[in-house]
Image (cartoon, rainbow, N blue to C red; front, side):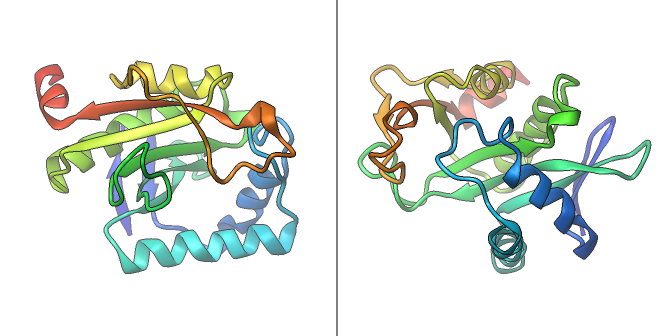
Amino acid sequence: MIIAETERLIIRNWREGDRDLVFEINSDDRVMEFYPFRRNRAESDAFFDRVHAMIAETDFGFYALELKATGETLGYCGLAQIDYLEPFVAVGTVEIGWRLAARFWGKGYASESARALLARGFETLNLPEIVSFAVHDNIKSTSVMERTGMHRVDGGDFDHPRVPDSHPHLQRHVLYRLTAPEWRARR
């Protein structure tokens, strides 16, 4: 199932053949620099099954990104409801997030896919706002947020409740937001 297309990308549901790419992403120290864990193959396959099931069960999920020119899967981008970050964001708020295999970094694919999914969120799903968050020092991700029109929420920094105390340097997160009226004004 194709969710959206951009100039260079097909944003689609996962295929069984994408498991190797998901494992590559989830076990790569560069990609997972701002996460307190790496996933082994079994854990990565379980993650793959969860994101695949999320798409089947809801209008939300993290979708595979495929290069139109080559058919290669390069990572994922998606929209997901948050249910664990109160009081920082309300239950049911939708976040946008992405991860790409390191060999595809620096080509604008994250921003391109994020713009398409922001459009889907506001124009098709009629969401009032979409948020994103990242470790304070994760400049690559916060730069994507800014390039897509999101803005950092004043006073919105928080310590992520799912980051263990064993990784204090990864606890502090910044919160970005884009509202539907802001999206429409930019269009």
